[in-house]
Image 1 (cartoon, helix red, strand yellow):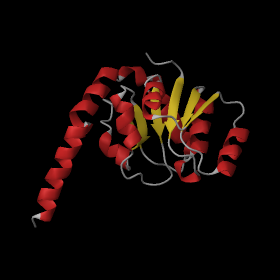
Image 2 (image 1 turned 90 degrees about the vertical axis):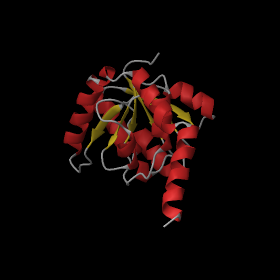
Image 3 (image 1 turned 45 degrees about the vertical axis):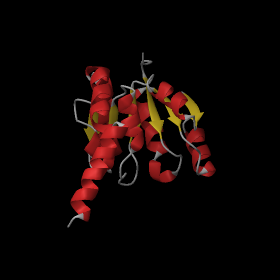
Length: 178
């Protein structure tokens, strides 16, 4: 069972992953934020934490896989808004496997994984943070419309170890035979 009014942010802690935006969103939508990940840039991390002391922050650091997945599954949703075009974002498949919906950018690897309005919500990358935060707030208010069991089923059907091996073998056969 997930805890209400909290979301997770789970990546290595560095400027390109944009913890500061996640904290700003947590403040604006009045949610607790669970932060998972290794601190890669200590100065950036300290700046973020010190700048958002009014936000309820639950810093978990880097956890072992089973502990991470258990804690992630307790979140209302995973927020993933990197400053760069994320290639794949394995944490998205981990979240879905725990039944946790994901909110992320449309133009990134996670945008190819998430089924908009079914396993999470996709937002357009924007320099206008006010509009972006408002859009995320509207999605956070209806995140409970996303079926957690559908998220889990989708992950099992598309991202299990066997499925990923089959997809890789198919891709290799197609691309190495030409």
